[in-house]
Length: 444
Image (cartoon, rainbow, N blue to C red):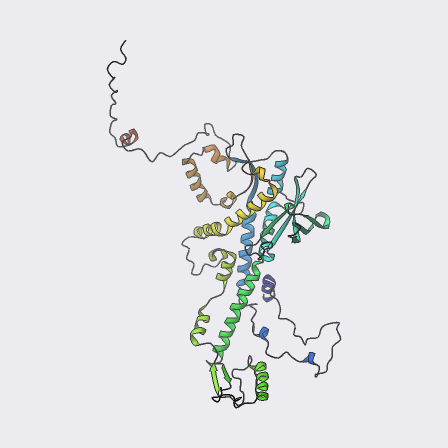
């Protein structure tokens, strides 16, 4: 389990000491050799606790969170749409070359994977590597021929070009340098200062987990000592101006070297010829604060932007119903990703002349495909706001019905004093008298 956790988070091992033996390099065994002496001043790396194997729950929780994001984005259907001839709504274009583009976006972008797998792997690479590259292989006519997910890539801002590596069918691996207009570059939320590259989510997670685990370990060590304090003993300042104090310079130098070597390991560093001591360890209030802090599944849920209940951890959940957690996930985590997808696809597959006439749309209807009750409520609202029954039936691939193209509008509201309100109250409608004809009009 520890190895799996370390592999998921790509934890680095402690750096090799400077006196370690390097394979293939001549090495002296003489203890007087300076290269064989341990570094002075203490080893800070030894005190940093790597959170490997802190709890077996973190591994399945992280797997659940990452796979949930990947599979949710994989359900989306990406559509290349155009406006109708009358300039009304956008409809999916399935004719000619545009239909072939929809085949790439919705079914099989390249011979190695399906569209859903491509979208899943893009999210995976954004989380773990910070960047996902898709090479747009175009035909002689300029239309996309394949969308290749790249295994590696780099960007040259001076030339505005990408260098990409991707695998094709039959195990062929290709390297290509191409213009940025031929590359779909999906960046993570965290980006470098120049905004050219995304940063892996796990870089942040690793730092956060390491800091928290180190603090936890320090709290446990202090508690295990029975409440003992770490004390710094130093030379007392001389009251006489112009003197060196009670310890000469050579003794102070020796004390400094001794202190630098073992102050990290010992509770108290004992030095001669000193008379002042200060407590440098943490107080009981600080230890209690560290002990009360919980760094478990909740922190992983925050990093990934997923409600904890959706990671199979419902202890102490504040959601009254699972639907609320689902709505939070769709609104806060999935919707921003949809917008990022659409922006990148529109900027690379369309031109400025297509703006307002054509678009790439990521359809989210598949997310409620199995929520029959929720979908029924939405259909009822659509029917009351102008949708025809046949338009609603078309979403479920049901045949049209006779006279099912009529459009309805809910009439729950009416003007005060109108005929509709008088009829609903059971009162007969008031007879209307024609307005008097002005004198002189209508006479021959």
